[in-house]
Length: 72
Image (cartoon, rainbow, N blue to C red):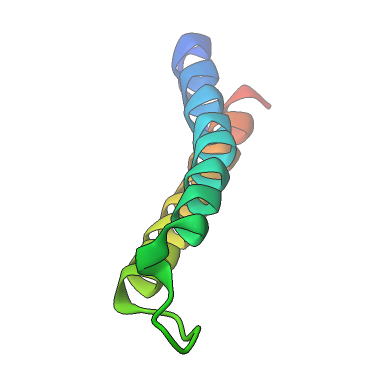
């Protein structure tokens, strides 16, 4: 892959950012009272946020891999 070094580094940083930030966000969402109903069952609020975090982390990994591949 032929990308400038600065762009490759930017992609790696963006990928790492996603891997650092989203798990912290998910921890806060899990502790939120809206995450579980009275019976302790996961709510739509929690489910939607788990999907959001999962997709964002997968994209973060993909972006990081592209950045690393461009540097190699």
